[in-house]
Image 1 (cartoon, one colour):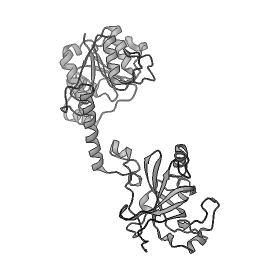
Image 2 (cartoon, rainbow, N blue to C red):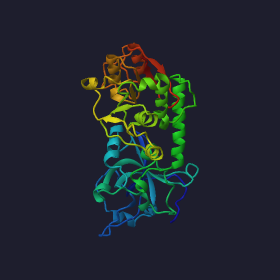
Image 3 (cartoon, rainbow, N blue to C red):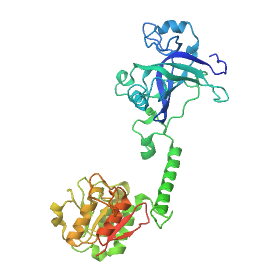
Image 4 (cartoon, rainbow, N blue to C red):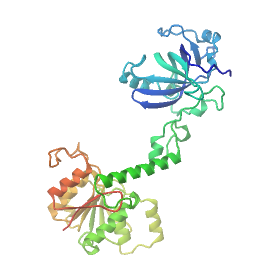
Length: 406
């Protein structure tokens, strides 16, 4: 492929090709990689390429085949298309957003009318070609319509090692992979699955959280805290050391409200032989370590391996069914936080809560000392400390705790 002169050139062109990459810098600016493969249909009409356009203000379709015969711009394999709010095709942010949702999607074959230029070598070592979407853009072929149920795969549409191909834009990290370590799309995902980048991101995120906990909320444990995977064990140890096992075993034992998978109840009932009742509408699910524990250790025949579960919401209508419990607890009980405190006050029970989400839209009556709506976790804790006789302590893990002692 001949290499064009390394100078800045600008000309009006019509670009027809498939979108194989994208990079959104902000809501006002985005870059798209368009593959110009010079593919032709059964009639011999060129479908992909870069062609001169004498009148780009005219959106009427011209003969692409005739344009190909009069130019060598079609030697370009990959071109960067620039979409910028406030310029040409996109008069404002809303127009750009609409185009991104409907037209500028991975896999779509699009026709772009705009200004073509090539960056100087000192600006870009590869002298990549760029077209500004200044006049018009339309969809020639929709990927989802042409390939129903199939995920777009960039590798199938970009020639590896092509001499004319400019440098590839590094794809943005996949948010599903970064958060979960896996992505359902696998290799077909258009975003990057970089394990080292994910590891670095997790380290930085944890460090940032610890810094906020220390500087903003006064967490005394500094950097010496256990991971979240240890929170159920640490909470159970705290309950035993604070209330004592004899107190926890009184009556019907510990009432674990909105306990999710039942991690705290497992620590108390199965590992420490402290009778517990899990109140959780969803089905209980054991993790790998819990399954291994049940296999490795013989649980006392006098106590069932797993505690009783009541699959109901915890509401004032069923409070009396749990009146004989010893202590009521909640590990991230979400909406049930207030119900736990109400129950404890009504039946004079000790309680301990590791708070989580606040849900201000569900509890608009919660107001702090200034009369402002409670929207933060610490605000909720401070509110409960004022309303009830309670104490606030920090657990040595990535979490917080509020407790009421009998």
